[in-house]
Image (cartoon, rainbow, N blue to C red):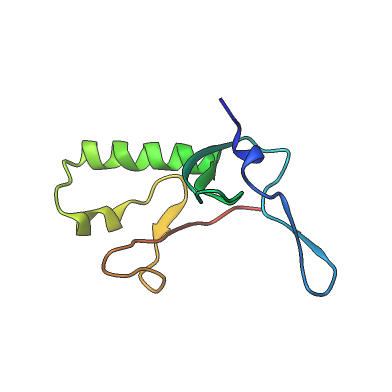
Length: 102
């Protein structure tokens, strides 16, 4: 099995010369390759850290425990510090934000 780090560029050089890191090498990431361009070297996929994987599982648990059938009811998910952000969401994509305590 290939790790997500092999598919994701960890660092990107900005026009001002500074480097921006997309992944923290101290974290564990899981990824799925979705598509590769035929004959090219670009791969497309989804990468998530363990926190996102745990949150996804918690959301599934929330939906099962509450017998959710209407997608609108998912907006009530409020576990692990996540809350629904209507200002960032659309009719077809819901965005949840987690407040991190410092």
